[in-house]
Image (tube, protein in one colour):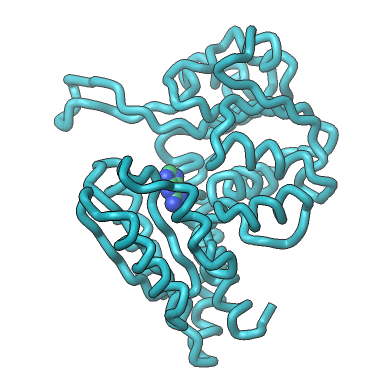
Length: 295
Ligand code: GUN
C-alpha cells in the first residue's frame, strides 16, 4: 500500500481563505489585526521563517510590524520592545522568534509578553490553560497538526498516538492537546524522547506517529505498523551536491520507505510547515476579535 499524502499546503490554503474572509469582515468594522514580529540575530532558518510569516500576514490582510534586531541586542532592549508592543493597540499578537542569542533568557522574555497577545501560546499562563483544557491561544505547530488530522478525517478518539520529541514548542504541547477530553482529541498518548529505551517498541503499537525529534531517519519503516498515520514535523538540511544550494530539506521520517506502510503521511516540505504559519495567523485574528469584544 502506498500512503495517501496529506497535503499541508492545500489544507493551509483552505484555512487562509477562511481567514481572508474573516479579516475582510473585520476591516469593514474598522478593525485591522496586527502582528508584531521580533527576530534577534541572523540565523538563516529563523530568517526564512520570519520572512514567510511577514508575507503570509500581507497576503491575508494582517498588519505586521517587523523588527529585525542585531545578534548583540541586550535583554533589556528586547524587553523594552516587547513592552512597547504590549501597550500598542495596533498590535494584537507578539511573536519573538526562538531560539534567542545566549545573552537573553528565553523564559524571561516569554513571561514578559502580555498573555492576551501571546499568539505563540508560549506564555506559562497560556500553557497552563491549555493543559487544563481552557480556551486559550494554542501553540501553532501542535494546533496545525491537530487541524490537519481533523481535516484529513483521521479519528483520534481512542487512537494510540506516539509522539517522538519532548520540546516545549511541539512534543509536549501536541501530546497534551491530543489527550484532552475534547472532540478532535481523546487519544491515548505515549511521549518518547532521547532517553526512551526502544522507541520502535512504542511506535510499532501506534495508530498515529508524530515525529518531532529533529533528526533525519528517526522513524524507519520497521518502526511503523501497517496502516498507521505518520505526521513528520522535522525540517532538517542534508547535504545534496546535486542541488544548486548544496542541500535539501528532509523530515524526521524515512519518507520513501515509510509511505509504503503508512495509510497517510505528511511530506517535507509541504506538510506541517505551512500549517504552523497558518495557525499563527488564526491566533492573531482571534486576538483582534477578543480585543474588540467579539469573542
Ligand atoms: N522557533 C521555531 N518554531 C517557532 C515558533 O512556532 N514560534 C517561535 N516564536 N519561534 C519558533
